[in-house]
Image: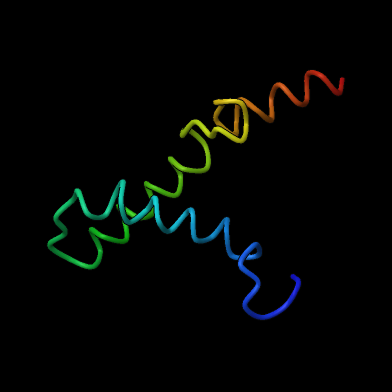
Length: 73
C-alpha cells in the first residue's frame, strides 16, 4: 500500500463492489438479510471463479490458473 487516499490501491476493490452493485444486487429483490447474504456469497464465487476477466485474456480465474500451471510445468 502506498498510503492513504491512493486511488490505485483501491481500484480492484472499487471495481469488485461496482460490479456487485450494478450486475447483481440492483437486479434482485431481497426479502431478508439472509437472502441478501446468500446472494452476495454466490456473486463472490461467480466473480472469483466463473466470470471472464478481460485482464486474464477473457478467461475465468480458474482457467487462467490451470493454463499458467500447464505452461510452468
